[in-house]
Amino acid sequence: APRPPPPPPRPRPRSEKPGRTMAFPARAKGMGESFRAAAAQYIQPAPILSHAQRVCRLYRAALKTQGSWAVDRQVFIAEADKMRAAFDANAALPADGRQAILLVEAGEEKLYEYTHPDRYICAYLPGGSLYMRNPPLPLHVVHDGHVPAGATETFRNPDMTVVVEGEKGTVGQVLVDQHSKRMY
Image (cartoon, rainbow, N blue to C red; front, side):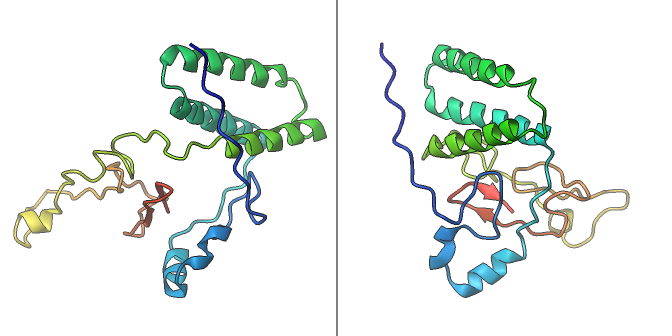
């Protein structure tokens, strides 16, 4: 059976550049000023990535995007093999070379163009069917304000992972964007 044609490329707002994160995208102009001020408290600064990290994240994001478009596993595997061959063909380029930088930027542009409008989401992540289903109650609620001696309360992120010091959620609150399915 022939594969469906790829979706038409989406126009990129002028303020969005691949590989860079912004405090707020251009489409956020319609938000109320108070919401933007509240949300700004949750947004963390973008990490500075090495070339190898950018390439690894691009490859992983490309595989996830391909998984959203490919319904059949065999089609996904064939396309993933082609993608891996394209990455391997340029693996010998020097990381600080202009051609390598241009290839990563072109790959990020292509990834943006092929972003699925309703991507696949793991069940336990924001937007998934199990998201925040049956979260554990805090011990002070379970024991009527008196936590038993020796009991330790573990705090959890919205995706039900245990909060680790220095990661998201350590301030006690996490903002979940239900539209883009991201946590800040």
